[in-house]
Every structure is written in structure tokens, then in C-alpha cells.
Length: 269
Image 1 (cartoon, rainbow, N blue to C red):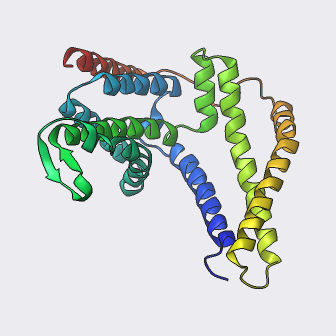
Image 2 (image 1 turned 30 degrees about the vertical axis):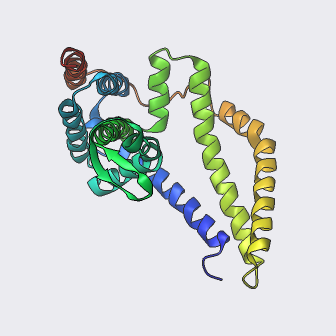
Image 3 (image 1 turned 90 degrees about the vertical axis):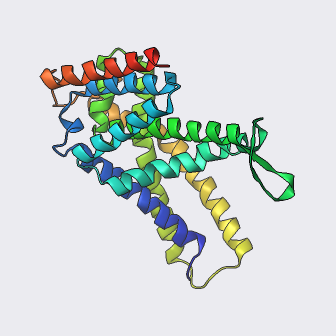
């Protein structure tokens, strides 16, 4: 039985779990961004994201993108996997949004395509500018997640006085996703162990729908149990970890550079 929905689903779930474990491993390495205080990192990267969103200069945004790649290298993040992660998100979501701009934006004609479609120079510049801006924003946001343990990130949100409800939702979502992934692995392995031959496509779709329904029923049943388990381990709106936050001189340097980048984006726009 090759290439059935069971094998494909198990592969995707295992890949997701491996990526999560890989991110936690990266966050505990001794790299550049890992050494920063999580509070300074959150504020600094937020300023960079504001700068990227406010800037209208492609050269400045490209500089921010190059800086993110340099930061990834200095933080011991595999550059190939990092770039692949960015391209996947950008091409899958932003590319779909930017595609109509190639044809719908008025301007000089760049290419003539079949079916009467015309790619304009103005539309191409707009689409490329959007892809550049989103790629830069995604790269910096990914750096924040990949270089900060999740519990420390939630604690930093709490220290920065984000609403407790928001921190609680983020914490519950993170724990709940892992729980659902483990439940899915067990269900699909159980289903696979009972299959003796390849099923017709219609039957596979029926089994997939039934599996999704059972998974939803289980998720509703254990949602309160997950929250009670978190509370029994000391969870109160945001995690209390053994890590003590302490601002040091290089945190101040990072915040100063982030402030300068934000000011430059508003001055040069």
C-alpha cells in the first residue's frame, strides 16, 4: 500500500513534529540572537517589522532582508532550511495575492501572454515589492520564533504587559497543537495497522472524513483536561520559568540599532 492518504498524512504529521523539536533545539544554541534577552528581542524585532512595513524604498527593505540572513547565520540556523521556510510561506500565500497585480495594474506592457493577458511593468514592480516586503517580515518573525524557547517568549509577552488573555490563548494553542498532532499519529497508525490492502479512493475519503470527525470529538473532550494539566503545573496566564531575564549591554545595542532602523525607514520613505 503505497501513497495512500494514511502514509501521506503520517509523513506530514511527523514532519511537523520534527520541525517543532528542531526549532526548540535551535532556540537553545549559543548563537547571536539566542544570547539576547527575550524582552529586548521582542521589542527590537517589532521595531524592525514596523520599519519594513513603513519603508517604501526597495533598497532599504533588501538591506533588512540581508541583515536577517546574516543574523540567521550568526545564530547557527541552517541557511538553506531558513530560506526554504521563508520561500514556502511567501510563495504559497503572498504569491497568490501578488499574482493578479501583474495583469490588473495599469502601466507599460512588459510581456504578452496567451489568452490575451498582458503583464505590465508597473504590476511587476508592485508584485516584486510586495514579495520583498513580506519575505523580510517573515524572515525576522521566524528568527524570533526559532531563537527563543516558547515558554520564554510567552513570559516576555507577560513582562511587556500584553493582555493576559492573549498570552493564555497563545500558550493554550501551542500545547493544544502538540496534543492534536500526537492524537493524529496514534489514530492513523491504528487505522494503518488494520488495513490489509489498498482501498478504493472513495473508501479512503470516507475513512479520512470519519477520522477527522473522531479527532474533533477527542479534541473537544480533552480541551479542559489540557488546561487543568497546565494549571496543576503552575501555569497562571503566562509561564513561570527558571530562566531569569536580565538586560545586558548587547541588549541595549540591539535595541538602539532597531530604533535607528525604524527612524531611517520613516526618514527615507
